[in-house]
Image (tube, rainbow, N blue to C red):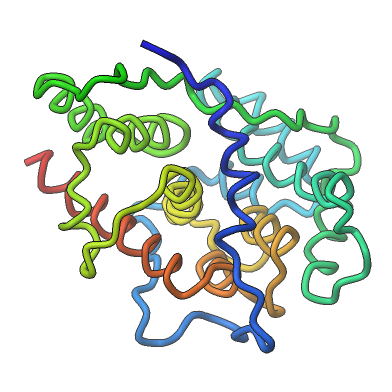
Length: 260
């Protein structure tokens, strides 16, 4: 068995290959015909919403961590660190020149994150046990699918998705109507988009003022007032947006059906 503790960096390296650079990017929300990312039926905790929308992020995060358990604190720190990492990544990448499509979100993140420690630039994925080089046996494939079925959101889902992908047990012909096959870098980058949609829906933080939307807009640029789904719709090529949406829909339906 081998471990890929560095898989999280693949998403940062591979994401530019998935992005488009159209002469005139689409404005505002995604097309009306596109499937929307609906909030979870039950609202996330009020404190989750408060942190992800807080103008005074340090105060909101301090209050949240005083009430939350260790798992919740770690989960929220992942979201906050990911958002506060965006302006630093832009500087490290040499992409901090004036850009009207990125600057409003970047400046707002810099303001909210000003009194927080600079997060690490290394973003490890949850340790992922990949199969041996030989073809996985049926039992290993079944275990990979069971792990994916039980996964919630965050790194556990990303790791479970990648194990199933590397094991060759994902029904890609069922997921994608045109029977496309993902490359490993695509599988890693697109599950990150899906995670943004799932997390923001669960925490009711998909709006333009949330840390998740600000992060996507700061890194990739977006029209004013873009929510999380619309920001990704503008950032991704049409093919990759369709792929992310197909994965999102399939995971929702498959996990719900498999749980019955």
